[in-house]
Amino acid sequence: MRALVIIPTYNEMENLADIVATVLAVPAGMDLDVLVVDDNSPDGTGKLADSLAGDNLRVHVLHREKKEGLGPAYMAGFAWALSRDFDRVMEMDADFSHDPAYIPDFLAAADRADVVAGTRYKDGVRVINWPMQRLLLSFFASIYARLATGMPFSDLTSGFKCFTRSALKRLDFSMVRSSGYSFQIEVTYMAWKRGLVIEEVPIVFTDRKKGTTKMSANIVLEALLLVLRFRLLGSRYGNPKS
Image 1 (cartoon, rainbow, N blue to C red):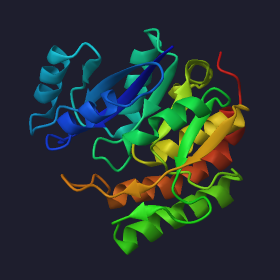
Image 2: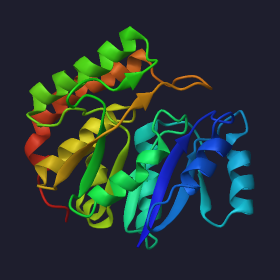
Image 3: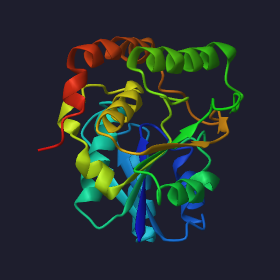
């Protein structure tokens, strides 16, 4: 079996080499590759990714013309993975907020689930070094999304996920309209509505030490408005992919 870890980047020069090396050193129990999806970072992240790929056949790079957000970057990565023979496809951030040490736990859980999501909020809060304002925003955003959609999961904004190949093929990404962190809510909602088995794995989330966050007020607003789309088109998310 083969697994792919997709790492979207925009100005992650300070973190990229370390995160790629750490991911590749994980004892995953299967072949593990990395795909860097770079949105034309002006700091040279894309060039560094090319250099890493030139030194290691397990590292791949997908260059995109401009910054469009997490959603489009991940969807491009999913399409890239499906065009090749990867059995498991993971999402994770470049800044070490998602600890690569959890990768084996996600891959093991994917043997019994279609989608595996890291949770920071199941049986307590597992977040380190986040400002209280951002922690409360994330925590209550998950509660809001859970109440609005009826989904029974504790962390709906988590960006640390693993999909089986069959799960990705059953999701219709042409329906996705979110580009920021609400992409995570929308994809989980679609998977849930289509009857995919979703399992949460507890993780400890640590705020980045290098670089700057991409969170903005527009991203938060997008997430709040997303539930209106669910109410209007919720039944369509559950239709099988044609």
